[in-house]
Length: 328
Image 1: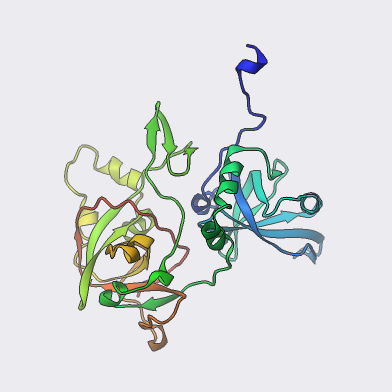
Image 2: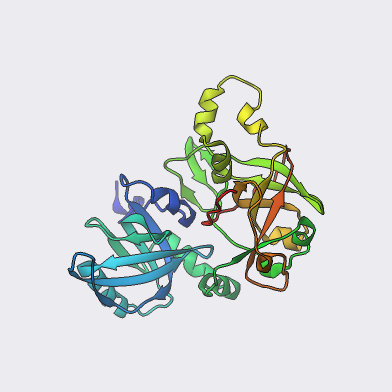
């Protein structure tokens, strides 16, 4: 074919959402492509590791506008990155990290380089162009590049949760359902191909305490925490059965403590369907200082519920959390 009749991209990336990186950190088989805006770039460091070897370390934080991810580049790779950064004119810098390793450090996701890793700064790519266009919006810049403090958890009654203001709104990763386009699984909001889609839980329940009731959406992690089975496993065990599995039925009528994720729709439209970002059996023990205080601007509400009843819902919001509550 004539060169002017076909366009072949120089590079192809298979980007993962930042919200998917936690799952990727639990395996060592696949490397990952990520893209983000450099939000914070720390001073280049010389250090000595636990084996007494001297190393160099370059640390930064990237964001997609919804969540932040820590990046650590080591030794010669970090040195090259620091050199390349000094030559970049356009700020803020949008970075593509290809074939990187996703792991954890002190419980948080941390991306690091391996021999196959490559970096591209302000690269000519349609995803970079999309992020650059979003950076033209002052509201996006304020949300994406602002430094946020870690939210404290407060124990709140349902009636108080329904009165929360916009300062409680939390923004998190994408957990939308994929759609098939020409037999290819695609996430429309993210405009990306999803190579390995997974079957996940999404269950709507009615939760109540002495002050009222709300609908709560339990996502994949929350349901797996309670029944200790993955959705795919449960489907295989109950293939052909039209009844709800007994392990889901037994969730109703018990005591739980739930961390709720507050979305813009919950506040602006008084929409009282909330996504859970964590759950545990029983009521957690809470000190008096952690009880309802709606004057604080850095709190994630927790509600203790004593009944659960499965219901239906068309709400397709999103929710994710790195909190880890221990059951009493």
